[in-house]
Length: 434
Image 1 (cartoon, rainbow, N blue to C red):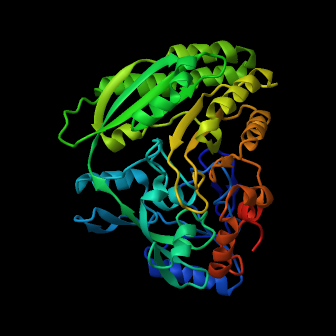
Image 2: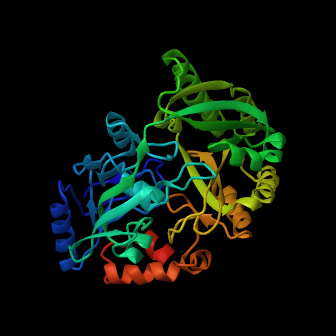
Image 3: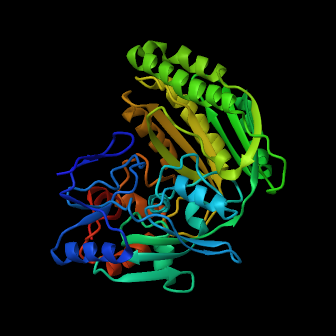
């Protein structure tokens, strides 16, 4: 038995066996063998989902030996990457060939397969999540067969598998539409929350990648504006000393210390939250895109996130602000607000609508269930769709009402995995049993 846990400690499992294939053929052999025996198998990813989407007591696939770039087409800027490759490794490899991903989230520890399978996204009103950058996929189905899909080849499978929750098969390779390397100009500064909300639509529209953080019990928001520049633009990255002071000391060490004090003495959380908000500083810098998109997270937390229609953000955030003071247990972590363009991926949280994302957090080890349940009830009023890799309690019956192509997805799943070789308890809840 091999113990497994995710990054946040919210999911644990003891897979009966962990397979570590080195090729698509070896993945297919494992899957075929498990399926023929009537068993189950799950790919583990890197454990950065807060849900138990990867957890299994049956066989597990560890793809850390199936990494790297397979093919590059420098004319089309399309790159085929193996499924176990982390975003961090992929960004470094793309640097070396003068390419970049169009949009990224702020964590790069996920595997490319795990990131797209759970709907990982960044921010930007004109941009979609990582899955919208996919042009083709190679999957190993439950019978061990290897299939490819794209908008032209098996389009229904493509619509489903771009955010497939690992329910359709094991992703072997992903072909991404990249673009020439570019620079991001970053502006980060604290602003009054009311001012941020008043100007939200204009900022989300005018800035390429816009987001903000709000600390509960305070009226200050940390606003981040990232705007795209050509590769030959002058770069002004933060010095190593300032990076260490601002990120390692302030955002990780000092903030982590405040969180631990708040966990030990909950009545101090409100003043500590205000202190954390006042620690925010103004900074402007520019660098290669992935170095600006990504931020190292050293303080552990739990998270829930919902995508809502973008126009509903002011009302939803107002209700969330009213909820927080009524909670029995205080909230130590900030709320994150981002945006994304509508897309056409069947289980994408941004399917068919321009979206705002509200992500709420709590420091690891502090009570969070009342907070998360209250937030879910608010998001439910506007048809909120929970992030597939973050904590939520919705099941197949409710989720079916949130996605116009939910039953189309289940139809494709039945074709690809009729016996439920890839299912687990989480998928049984959100998709129903096969």
